[in-house]
Length: 205
Image (cartoon, rainbow, N blue to C red; front, side):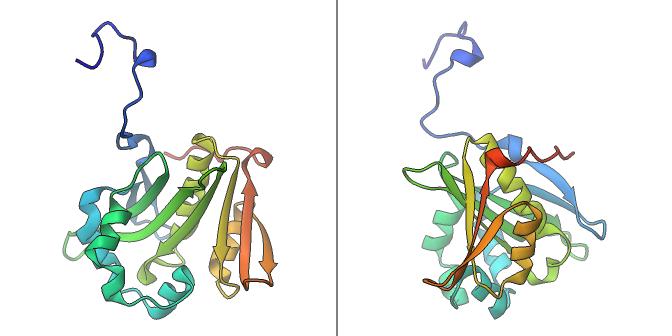
């Protein structure tokens, strides 16, 4: 017995492992009208993540990870197990899932990740969209939802690091109110958004 039946919900003890955050599951529609479900990642998504990585171009991989990582390394079980089985208290990974019109199979077409910094109240965001789904608004939507989540989770600031040639994601972050600066020391573009400086984004249905 963990607690008596008469215990009010607001007085329930906090579980050691945070439950799946169903409050972050919401549908979305792309610019061309395709329906997509954006939801937190689950451990059983590993096979879908393998298929997500298989068609990625070298350029998409390079812009996301800052260097080339072979497919075998990206889809290795040890790596994907860490990515899919997350501690929702420390990080939230969102996946964008659609049904393939031809086969009806589930597909992941985008992944966004928000990782809280240890010992700080910052969170780092990163987004990767499959090549076939780029320029359809998904990257902006994933980044926008992660900013919303960071605000709900009580973070003070959201940060990101980008390659200077990643103009698409720089545009996304500028659209969301981030400030960009180029770091000569490490050759990266740094993006930062202070959450108390902008109003909450409108809720989506």
